[in-house]
Image (cartoon, rainbow, N blue to C red):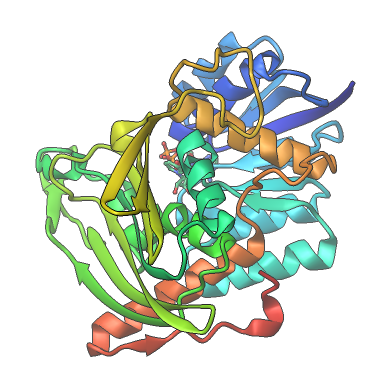
Length: 383
Ligand SMILES: NC(=O)c1ccc[n+]([C@@H]2O[C@H](COP(=O)([O-])OP(=O)(O)OC[C@H]3O[C@@H](n4cnc5c(N)ncnc54)[C@H](O)[C@@H]3O)[C@@H](O)[C@H]2O)c1
């Protein structure tokens, strides 16, 4: 069996999540490529300490150049604050390695374009993280849309909702500061997750009107004082997409302050003949709308069966965050090896760049209270 070696730069929340998925790779049934996490870089020694429990890891370093110099590393997963994406992603690509990037794929549109350009020029395999669509529910939503059962599509709603920021005593971190996470704020945080499925279905926003909200503007700095919290907490984008020559409204919600929601990813698509909706709030439930003499929403309890890459987990068991994250990593490794076989793939650089065009238009829309045309540089996009 082919084997690929992985390095991680940024061993925090997501670095650990990926390490845990690589560590149980054997759970994937008949997967054509094995993986081994062999090196981790983080500035924080305490974070590196955690990785000492992983027997395959032979390099723990605070110097990422040491990791990039290792000739036996094939793929680098970079999970760093957004202000570091461009520099680190470019250095990974220049070092001759393939890249699994984290969203938002650069702090802004300019950074995303620079990363896309380098990936193309250097011929590296690059994809961006967005795991929720790998759950069976979103997979079924896409299948239902593509089946044509919905008739003429008349409305789309998608979103990702958090609420932990309602806790005003939560100390500030880099994610709530523009200089680290970007002017796009919550759009950079949650927007790629929201746009992954719409973009893959060919629904590229053409017009955008944005409502952006700064709700909590200071937080404890962790040292007894208060610090400015200057990012957009919530974004609601009212967009228009062209579907079969119809201008269809698509609402995209990205919220850090959505009371009652922990990590709720959802999508709802309505058509003249049917509809489909899924939310991680009710992880197992797929809802399909049908019109006959009467109209009804039909609930199906999904199990594990619909994941793109089958595992040892029984079909009736329910999947969660760790499972879709592992499915996403499997999709990356499979696609890189030419073994995706028409399954759903990770966000492409073109899609990540497209999301930045939408976010840039949204910033402009809110600043001027205008409806903005999203000016994609089409020659750069092949989605
Ligand atoms: N896919 C998802 O669901 C998801 C969820 C959360 C975050 N993210 C993304 O993952 C990325 C990282 O977020 P996180 O939540 O893991 O952040 P985090 O703060 O938990 O981890 C970042 C780590 O990077 C380290 N670091 C900072 N600067 C460094 C440097 N110069 N060299 C080496 N290490 C350095 C920090 O010490 C920290 O351990 C971001 O792009 C974020 O948007 C994705």
